[in-house]
Image (cartoon, rainbow, N blue to C red; front, side, top):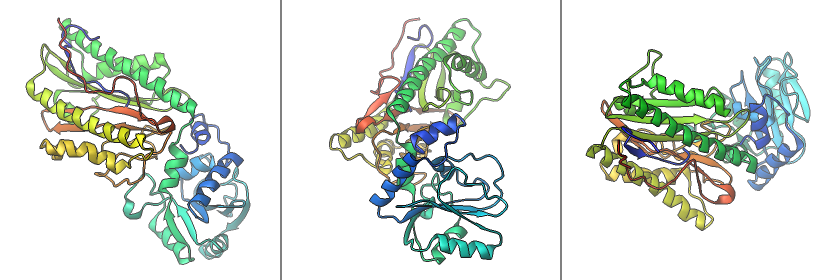
Amino acid sequence: MITALLCAMLAQSAPRDAALADAGTAESATIYQGLTPQRMARIQRALQRDKLDGWLFFDFRRSDEIAYRLLGLDPGGARSRRWYCLVPAQGQPRKLLHAIEPRALDGVPGSSATYTSWRTRDRELGTLLRGVRRVAMDYSPRNEIPTVARVDGGTLELVRSMGAEIVSSADLVAELESMLTPEELASQARAADLLSADLEAVAQEAARRVREDRPATERELQEFARARWAQEGFETEGWPGVAVDAHTADPHYSPLAEGGTVAGRNSLLLLDFSARLAPAGIYGDLTRVYFLGESVPEEIQRIAGHVFQARDAALQLLRQRAEFGKLPSGAEVDAAARNVIAKAGFGDRFLHRTGHSIDHHGHGDGVNNDDFETRDTRRHLPDTCFSIEPGIYLAGRFGIRSEIDVCLPGGRVELRGGPGQSVVPALLAP
């Protein structure tokens, strides 16, 4: 527990906002297995179920990270020319590569053709697509899901000119990139538990420094968190966000090297921690807000109450739908939280989506809780993780965000990293 001057915890939350599992793990460990028979079989089952003739991957100068992950490719080396790879619903892949980079798709089985000029490229691409009527590509209509929108408009025009109907791969990406194994789900739980303890430790450090009349700067608290992470085995590129007072109204604030604001007596302290355990874990991502004073001001309590209610509305929707075996879409989860804040009169102060996909990337390629920044109508899937993180930001004054992680092992709703219910501010004696 936080003692002395850290007397009110406002926003305590559980965890927070897969290429195939082996593809994600391989990428993180820098081991590239290529398109294994197991992965290809999983892709082809999904294509057959969705009545698609294939999935056409395209890349120019590493423009499509999804393709590299799903195909198990090393993105290094010479990648200066366009390549195409059709994974059909049945049979072996068909590849088209530039003659000066014929090894760009090594690791993917199947036949290969090469081109040099755009004329031969067009002819060979037409041959590759012969008989293909409906094909998935990594694009999103109207760019509504930008994490999937990796193929440029001109390439889409080219493929359509050859008679193929293009279908967005967004649902396929969510299934094949963000669904996690039991071991990966366990790594997420471990990361969230450690981050939960780290949040409390940093808040305690801030309180201790206030008691000693030598309050810490934002940067000093950030470095305190990084030191703990190094001991716990987190990867070094994790995000220990620390914001004080007016900076808490900036959702992506990061303290400057000079130190930033001092976390002093009666300061509001927002901690946003995102990290994964090395070498290939799943991210934990949590945000909590603390007050370093004797009692929490009424306005802060009131704003925090709206944020907690919004968070709980999103959780309630998930739990209700999970009971009936029909998980909601990301857009529905976003609306459930956003409506609460809008009714409280702060709709224009909720500046971002309600949450994001979590996998081997802190912001993954699965379903986002979003009908605000983007329109994600994909339904949540079993064995995935994501954040729920509503917030209210009063520019120049303060902001409150409560961020929790939700995982869906077997379709069940689990909160990670601490209690999920609203927290009554705990007034602790000095």
